[in-house]
Length: 295
Image 1 (cartoon, rainbow, N blue to C red):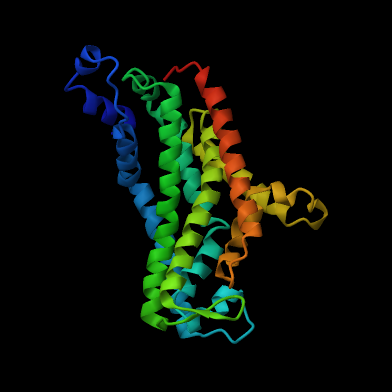
Image 2 (image 1 turned 180 degrees about the vertical axis):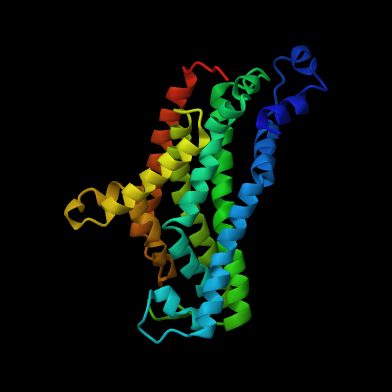
């Protein structure tokens, strides 16, 4: 069932209420809940979450079977054996490069282009749902989907890490130790920070999704955008451009694992993500508001 059918099914039982009370309008989350149910119910999205969750499990088992020597590999990877909470951090540092952006590409490709491809977009707008509200709901669902994707990495990673390597005081990247409760709180902050970064990418994907009626084309275009951003971010001669690239700030979440936490790069990352979200959502609105809906 598309979001259009879900919304219409939820409103068809009381067609006269809005007419009887035209000024008595409550803020309804029905459309958002319908969209989230559809996202969660798609088999390919469920399979994607399983793939995301499998990566930290495989990493933890691999490290358990062959412990890396001190000084080898990334800081998070070499620290896994000292505390199981480093498993989700190491997995996130790996998956933010490709797997999580790919998951966001698939979700955002379906946002508008998927409805148009199914022939339900025009049907949805006659429920009635105005276009601004529809875009807000679509973007909100993508942001929630970003949290789902990151949690699908972090929660199984934390569980398998604690089971295999135990927990206790966590040694920060500054060398000091913090308690387990504080360490869990740092992990929650990492999840929220990375979700904000993916939300910026979701806005780009939402804009691209308004340009086509082929969802796979929108997904591929967003992945090309992400890959090109990583390539540009790796060219030293383009250092002036790096702070403006969304991906440049993603791996700064390591600053949340310092004592005290370093907020400079984190703040710049959040501002960049917010800038991308605002600019590309407005671009999507400008495109979608005047677009002829033919399907």
